[in-house]
Amino acid sequence: MTSRSLGLLLFLVVLTGGCGDPAPDDGPRTVTDALDRTVALDPTVQRVVSLAPNLTEIAHAAGAGDRLVAITSSGDHPPSVDTLPHVSALPVDFEAVAAQEPDLVLATDQINAPGDTDTFEALDVPIYFFSFGSVGDILTSIETMGQLLGTEAAAADSAAALQSSLDALRARTGSLPDAERPRVLVLVGDDTLYSFGRGSYVHTLVRAAGGTSITADIENQAPTLSDEYVLQEKPDVILGLWGRDYDPDRLLDLHPTWDVVPAVQNDRVLSLPTSLIARPGPRVLQGARRLARHLHPDRVSAPSDSAGRLSSSMSSPAAP
Image (tube, rainbow, N blue to C red; front, side, top):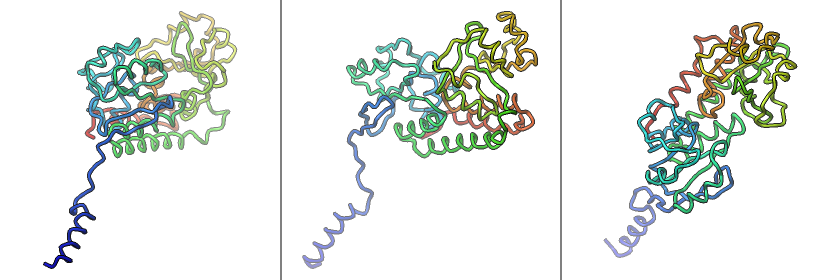
């Protein structure tokens, strides 16, 4: 081989990297969280602590449930998380979190104090904050989780499946005129009447289910309602977040004057687990569909309930 040919061969080897793939970038990467903070992460995140139950479910939906090494003490879904260490998030047990040697801590400004970032920075533990102001934020958070934890393809599939489920529900209820949409009161408490005010994604879920949320225009984001308010607004349906085994008769025991409220008169009090409505995660579509079956059984029937199966499967551990 001539020296010219050898030189040309060496040039081609260098140019193509020896016919192999380019070497990966092993340097740190930076991302921006919902608090507009810049967070530095290792190229691969393997050990994750979740400080909010909805983020635990979102991590599973994103195909990264196996990255979780500890979760908040209020986390209860999917069932596999019962075997993980549980740490306090209110207040944060910083020592217990640091003991897990996490590559990343997941938090949300709906539960966790933004000021905790200072302590985590002092511990040299990256923390990423999410925020949920809309149903769209829930879908986007699944994709974001995939980007953080390196499971982009699985996360994109889950987000797309949830969007498809939401679109299917809206296709069944979207044509309903306002006159045919029951007026729905969503309550977190049955004694003290905690509810949801302006800006909550809960109103979007009620709308998708074929109803109208009567507290959507209340300025306070987390209003406490009075008996007088309920008597004045006369909701057609009351959706309580009190669990499946709730006895609706308890409402009249607590609020005797409600015997004139249409929802009570017509036995249209529905109770669901809090996690299916008030926990912004993949299962809110299951909650919306259950509400839709209650509001419009002629349009949304139980046998076609794919949303529950969908969200349940997406909350199960998946390989990245």
